[in-house]
Length: 74
Figure 1 (cartoon, rainbow, N blue to C red):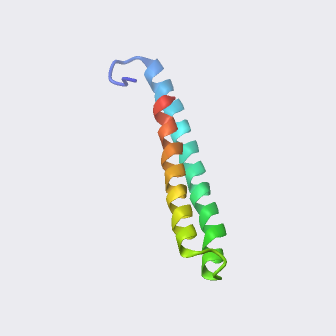
Figure 2 (cartoon, rainbow, N blue to C red):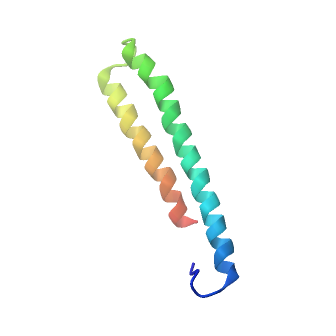
């Protein structure tokens, strides 16, 4: 995508890419928020072992990164 060539197709592609990027940002926000809403109360109440909470947090981070990497394939 090259916007400096004067081709209007580049503007349309930039718009599509920005829409995809915003969609992935919202998905990642919901994923991390969902993790925190579920896991933190369980960890505080002692129903979730510390190692399970750490593992779930790491998996949550991996999920967010993998979701963001989908933009490179599109």
